[in-house]
Image (cartoon, rainbow, N blue to C red):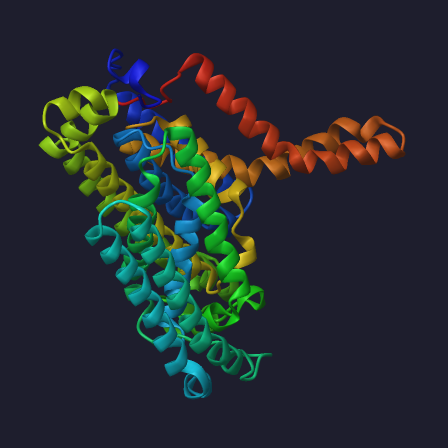
Length: 446
């Protein structure tokens, strides 16, 4: 039984399009007020990350809202999307390739062949001790051969100018190609995870996917040859111009002057607007495809499986195959969002991938917005990310005002310093309030 069986099969929530429009208008108003009273740079920066967070929420909503899969591996798939940007668009490092590139490729091929051979033998031999020992022997021998080739090649690559390089680099292709590549990489890993983990019960599936996400991030942190590990990779290619180049263009200087912006502020705003245009194209494309899929016979089948797996299986539906299918699709969407985020930052920092940001917060967006509703996930992404960024500053200013009449001392400084954690309290309170008064989110599934 999935986590939604007790509600989604019996409750049908009707809400008018007018309510949806009003809720989105309210969220847009929050961003407009932020730009008017604070700065348009800040408002656009929050909006860009809100779009990316909404795409991640859509991926989680596909897995949970469509099929009832309780996956907490969002962080890992977002990290894989970021890694794809490095592998596709970063400049190659010729010296590293000459020292150890062929050895690393050959070692990875040996490892992949070992896994394929183990799967083949497992499927061909009859059940028993012979099959167990044969598979075990293939894995041990293959792993040993792979490490025998990989280890010296990795050492050679990481010793190549480790202060500025120490990795193989990428293919040097346009960065926009890295976005679908991030989805493909996440989908491949999701297939491997799904083949082994989707047979687990929902709570065990959540633990397994969270653990696998931590493993993915740990590999990225420690394998310097891949993406420099914790040394980070900076100055990744961008799909939009650099601000300094805009500030030297006569047409832009005239445009900034006509709008009343100084060149530095105006260039930053224009670059963020360009990013916003690209991100919105991706967001709207994914929403459109998701809505079409959800209203198709395939979507009705997925909801039937979510509501009652036993009945759906009795009707001839391959539940395990469909779970794997939606798990891969949702993970691919998260991978695309992860690639977009790394492109926006122009750098890959593996240490920044934390479960609080890339798992808990994305799940809050889905739950608050409305599980099973694509537009609800988008609304939750914008609203929750705005709160996540702004509440900390609001909390500090509010606590400073409240304690202004207090005498300086330990208590006053402690209250002001603790206000920075107001965002965590706010997320918890909002989650509790919504679950109490609107258990299926502010835009429930229709």
